[in-house]
Length: 93
Image 1 (tube, rainbow, N blue to C red):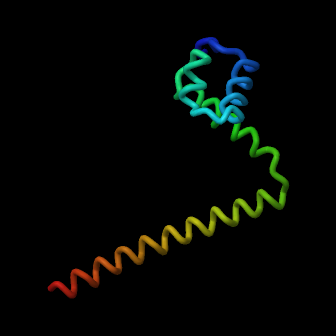
Image 2 (cartoon, helix red, strand yellow):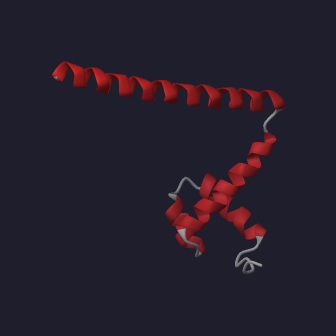
């Protein structure tokens, strides 16, 4: 079993909310609360993952489609880079 949490869920939720709405840098909010910036960042990422559950079915489908398109564009870009390198090599002899 892991070690027990040093901060309870209510404190974590409050810290994440403060970091989001205060307009101050996350590291300053973390320092004021007595936690590390890395810890607060992880709490914010976990909170973001929970917020993904709030997406509608159509939003999830759109998100998946956009991710699929992004993967395709990245693959095409890599192919273009390699072909450009090949042609430059051929031109330079």
